[in-house]
Image (cartoon, rainbow, N blue to C red; front, side, top):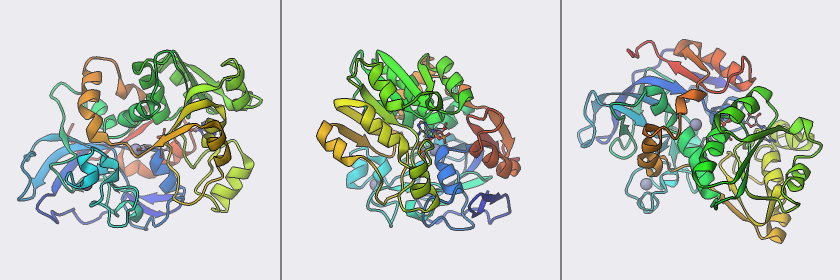
Length: 381
Ligand SMILES: NC(=O)c1ccc[n+]([C@@H]2O[C@H](COP(=O)([O-])OP(=O)(O)OC[C@H]3O[C@@H](n4cnc5c(N)ncnc54)[C@H](O)[C@@H]3O)[C@@H](O)[C@H]2O)c1
Ligand SMILES: [Zn+2]
Ligand SMILES: [Zn+2]
């Protein structure tokens, strides 16, 4: 997969990745998903997304080659590769903040390294490819349990941990009302995870009907179309005895719809770090003293967020890139125990060669698309 500029991707030959450091591995990709995060790149909203970059931070594959220092992986291992590139040794990695590694991204004061996520996240090529170079191979990559379906495994590289961490950061207490903005793969997993933390009521807000329908069944929650609500904030207050939700989760990020002003200033004129409409609603719909948990991605510059309301309501906002590796042991167990069925969200399987069509379909929400997965012709199973 090769980025050619906003709304343009192609599949082209690139040189086979090589071991550049003794702690690298080369992985032959078996499955690679397209993520809502890739849409921010595809829409041209992420700075320093260079033409020629290969996207893809959600992939599983077979280890083909390992550098001289790699100890935990061997050739032939089937691995799931967390989207974070992390050194495993710095002060942040030591606290299991694998999304904030201080070494893997020389540009960073905030985010660590991410596969295929522009030069602001380290400039690494991603896994929407036949082969990928995986740095710090002993840190992130995790051998896939024998009994685990590859389709489940690939969703453990980002979507499942991110939905789970969104719920975890919400500090959900027994019986809490949790509102999730966004019914994409991440919002779906956040809604599902909210129950695991003891939520008493889970409400999802989006405007794409087929996704609302899906999440209602998948996560057994309430789901509402904000286009048919006069005002989503008012609706949430009304339905919570005018208290507001205990926890609001932003699983939308800077590509949000719902406000002409945010769309124009955030997405058309690029005066903001995206359209912060869902975040705006989350802040206003949470109760006083509540928690707003943000996993939706925004650019680094200022946002039109109601920051004054954050102060006056005394609310807690928690946010981060997901520390996938920290959560994997717990989530692998949840999948094996049948508490989470990740692969149920995969709606489309396409050959890697059809990446351009896949991006268009996922971005335009065509054909009831929830999660597309790309399969290279070199994947043998
Ligand atoms: N923090 C992390 O580690 C991390 C990891 C993965 C994804 N993400 C981010 O999470 C977000 C969601 O990812 P996804 O894959 O589910 O994306 P997606 O694009 O498939 O889904 C986003 C959904 O939000 C809906 N939406 C748009 N405006 C809305 C609004 N105002 N209110 C409610 N819903 C609205 C869209 O219709 C869509 O269904 C993205 O911003 C992505 O970049 C963050
Ligand atoms: Zn992702
Ligand atoms: Zn580190």
